[in-house]
Image (cartoon, rainbow, N blue to C red; front, side, top):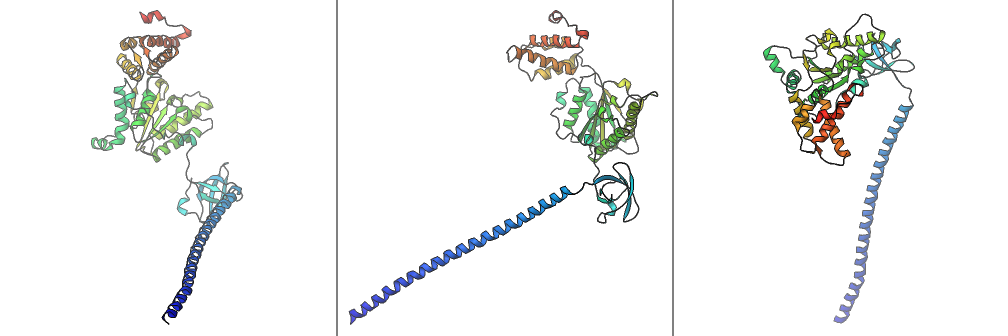
Length: 409
């Protein structure tokens, strides 16, 4: 009996074992199905998000296409606002119209002289535009500072000090002028022969100051259409005031600053209008505040007297040809960056009397070219003397060459 009971229990246990294995298998399969379902749900959510992003992008592209296909708007200026719904505008071709106003526009933005965009068909004011400067004026702002400091302006210690006192000091320490009770200088005029460092000094000022530096050549302000030169001058000073503290550098100012004559042509009269606008901006009713002016010319004798009076250019700084000490400082500056052998600097200084700073630099460059032509990596004293001969040949009138024997004597 005992053996039979044991056998029955064994049979029952053997039947229960496969049943438990099936349950475990089903549980594993159910768990896998749950994981697959969760993965599918995540993929569906990701796809739905991608679809939404693609729909938004398609909508943006449709809006861009619609905008590109829309007719262009006309640029005009608001002359006067009659009421909440109508205004007087002047279109780009100069014609004046009474038009409707966009009701979405803020009334405080609608002021006489404001630039506006007009519908091409109805000329209704669609939107208010920001005031824009002439591309030549906005492009005059120096974004990257030049890599020239005051150390590179050799032989002009006194002039550098005068420039720093008149330009940098009022911008960095205006309280000193208030304490003393004087008005800081508005601007300086750099005069001197070509190649003596006027533009180089202005570059050093641009490098040393944190103010916005705007450079413009005088000839760029001389326009052929009536009123264009004066408009550019107004925009130039408007840009400087908007980005103050700022420095305006007018190179070759004699292009628009020549003396006014009675018997002048129509072109001369337009240049004179530009000059009068410049005079008004320099010392008019509107204060320049933190705007300083640096001008440069090598023809101060032809400048108009009204331009030279105190209150416009308070300091006239003369930059002459370098003397012996200045030539030595300039040559030392350039030669220090070159590979040289046995240079008698004093002899070169004596041979370069009457040279400008630009000609001294050209002498060093020419000496380097002579060494390169001979296959050498170092410049000798003979190279510099030969370079002086060649520079003298270029300076001589009518192609008459300087005698090399005179230089080597």
